[in-house]
Length: 532
Image (cartoon, rainbow, N blue to C red; front, side, top):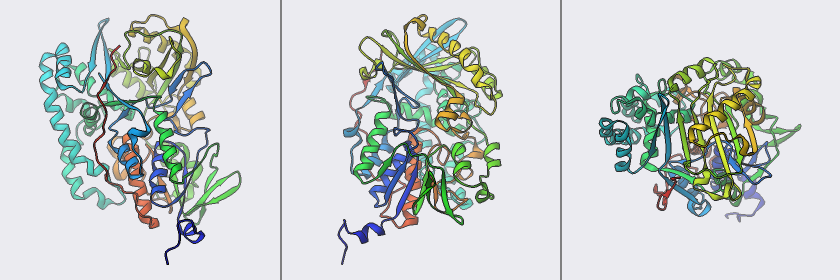
């Protein structure tokens, strides 16, 4: 006879899964595993969910995204919500921006603006203002990358566990389109001759913490995704999405425990048997690690258990992304003329990248500025503005002296904001917070302060990235930017789907699918005007 849903016998038969970290990967895993029948407990060291996809608030009434500031390709997250019996659009007020962002190119003392648009007619006109000949390359670029994504999607939607996975038919089909011999910038040069136009379609490699002059040509799909599927702003900031994910997970029975830092994973031999907190063991049939890979694995799993794979030595010698220097500014004024998303591209952009890679701190850096108040009035008091400033900088491996450099670099970053045409903002700062590379490591447990995790060069992708089913031990699974497929919110969500599919298979759950199952459409309403 089938046991009632609430019976102790059935409760005992449901596998227990411990998830370390309530970042986007951990929350997606909690949703999918709870929906598949597992008893899920999420242990989060901080007092809020979201990891780096959280909201920072100040007593003065300003709110900021800590890390990611927009949503790209929300199809994957919509499918995860649907799999869990929820509707993303009902849980989160998501606005599609048009224009998507403003690019400001510095050259010879002048600044050229380009408002990037998913309306291809409008985008062609924008490109033509800079380089009329290059406008002809937009639609061929889109067609080529549409085919590239379609060919490569199956590769990004499955696990890589053995060498045989590298020669499966989908991989062989996608390999020529990956162009492993080429880079993003070199591949774009077939369509766009003006370096500024190429930057409009290649600065997105910074989402991976990489240089477009070294990043594999596969990643031209990043800018394609923006123009094909749109750039979205969740009202209230990206932390609103993390909060919605936590709500859905808890509705499905997941237990999310805040202020619960994990000391280590408990092992019996090579098999994980739970987690330890303050000397107390909490048993589990499997453990999902969502903490930063380089920062967490040496602490959570003894080195001797990883002697054939990702040992402490291998982790320390791996290649990592750049870091970021962050300013969160609460201003007592509005910002007329400033777009929602702004990317200031220094005339020394290529030199900046070389400096970052060598450990030198740029004096005239490129930077990204979010003025969410152009779209969202909820993030600052009336008549005020919340400004988010991100500057790519060296990580702690190549520049260990950040603690002594932060105050000086703050002034460099503030002076660079004058490019927006606002003058000196210092007299208007009513709230300020800095997160520099050493803060990422100390306060947010990001290994080496490398904000975008392990670098995405070819020797650290697919099978060569830490596996979704962590191969070094039994019963440990990984989600987040440090595992396959890699960094960036849509990719992390896809990685959680892959990981939970493997775990569901291993524990005999009803299934947390690793391939799309729901309607792939996203009813993104009419794009909202993000023009200043």
